[in-house]
Image 1 (cartoon, rainbow, N blue to C red):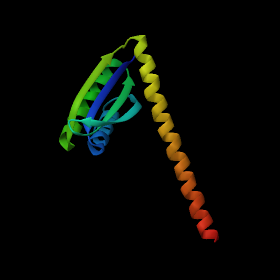
Image 2 (cartoon, one colour; image 1 turned 90 degrees about the vertical axis):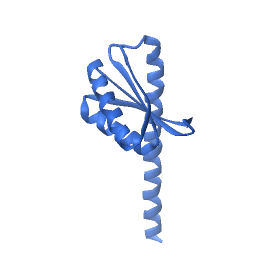
Image 3 (tube, rainbow, N blue to C red; image 1 turned 180 degrees about the vertical axis):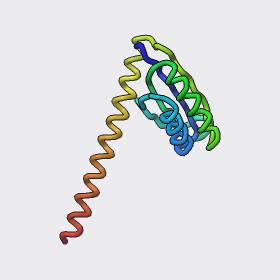
Amino acid sequence: MNKALGLIETIGLTTAVAALDAASKAANVTLIGVEKIIGIEKAVGVNIQIAGEVAAVKAAVDAGVEAGNRVGVVAASRVIPRPHDEVDKLIGKFSKNLRANEENKEVKEEAKKNKKKSDKEE
């Protein structure tokens, strides 16, 4: 892989959203995954995975960590420049999880719309 993988692990969703917002605004990176982690520092953690050019990911992770620490606690962060090809398999898994979550959300929203529509017709 010629790109870099950036990881930001936060305590709580609010901290993760603030970190991701800052990271996305700081550089041209792509969100490739989000994982909820139970038990990090005796709390629920969120791990954000981003990818892009090495310098962009480094800048994004730095900005995300700074913003996250202003809101809550960033437990860990790491930039892996040009990870080994075997890591691509893990990145693929992150991406699949993100796509599956988005598809589930779309299905739930469609079901809500249909329910509201049928409630109005009754």
